[in-house]
Image 1 (cartoon, rainbow, N blue to C red):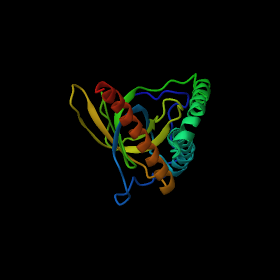
Image 2 (cartoon, one colour):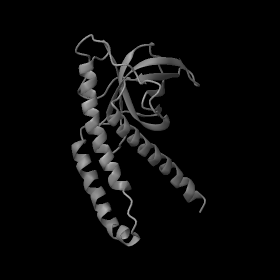
Image 3 (cartoon, one colour):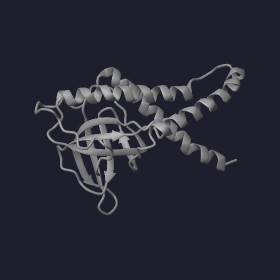
Image 4 (tube, one colour):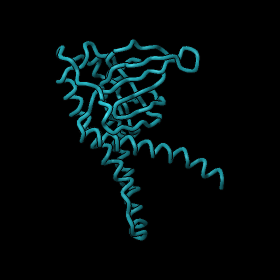
Length: 209
């Protein structure tokens, strides 16, 4: 799948070996969801400078997405105050949506696909195999509104036939994240996973009424 956008193919600045992938003793999770994803191959593998740049960019994007999510999920114990603030929330959502459309009007999201995502692993199914030990940058979009991707460098560790003609399941071991960034990333993924579960549950609940 060809990477969309104006950045083109990302290449590492040097030949120093990449940081190790996630070590097994760190806490992890694995959540299934459907989000827009695209990837590009890296030649040669990423060096420390590229991984540092990705980490800085991801920290900005993750922080922005968490703030947006917190605005919509912040609990208020007082039901009267909650009802009074609801019109303000609606107006704020409209303003944010308007600004997002203006900011991202020239950009389009890649195709949405089912994935499994954790701090150390990304997996998806596609129509062509990838060679083992191939290094990739996978761009995962966790917001339909704020269309900035989280860029995850990783190495293909498995590529096996999947159910369906000509389908392959690709598993990528992701480069290690710093603790603070990893915690923020995990929280964001949990919030998106919970949002998708609630979205799927809503029609089912309505059908039983």
